[in-house]
Length: 130
Image (tube, rainbow, N blue to C red; front, side, top):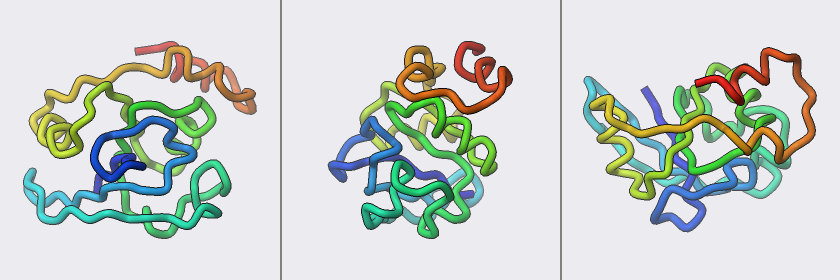
């Protein structure tokens, strides 16, 4: 399993997943971290600038961030990636908490109103449902 964490500053989990170009990628084997590496995307491959999945994030099953808009949240789901929003700032701790089932996450809440909607009512359930 691969988990990506938005980390524009290379230190903490950052917001604005759509504009983020730096991600920590964790390879997980048997519920343990096998490898951790930093991936830096060119600006044209950010989620905000492209419509697909950046090649460097191929294989990622979970994306953890401190914030993202509703369109990106829905796009990740359609790509088979589980988006998780957290207030946690430490990437290593967030991974440990995720693996032990203790990562505190929250719904999009106001994040759904940051961008124009282009999806069906099913999208609203993701934004407002828990």
